Image (spheres, rainbow, N blue to C red):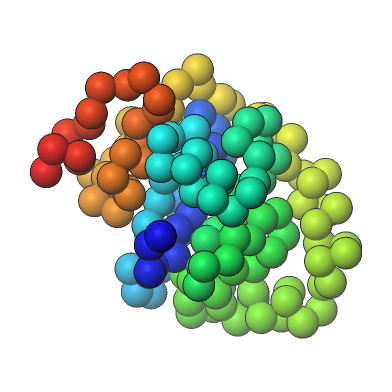
Length: 150
C-alpha cells in the first residue's frame, strides 16, 4: 500500500470534486494522492481497509496505514493541507469529539447532492491527473487511461 496519504472521493459528486480542488490549491506540501471511490484502485483500498465499496457516505483519508472516514477524515484533511487548515483541524480535533463530529458529518453528507452529481466520473484537471493514483480515475470495465500508459 502507498507510503503517502490518499484521499478517496466520490468521483460523481460535484461538491466532492470541489473538495479535491480545494485541497490541491491550498496544500502546503504535495502530501496527498487521489482516487475516486468508484475507481479500481479506490475499490481495492476500500476492501483493504474493510470499508463499504458502495453507497458511499463519506470520503476517506488513508494516512500512515489507517483509514479515516467522516469527521475524522475532514480533520485529517486539514492536517494534510497544512497552514491555517492544520490549525483549524487541531482545534476541531481537541474540542469536538468524534461522538459529536461523526453524526454532524452524517447529517451534512446528503447535502452534497445539492451541488449536483454526474452519471460518471468527472474528467480530472491536469493538476489532479498528475496526483492520481494509477487507475484512480478508471472504473471497473473502463479501458486504461492515458495516466496509466505514462
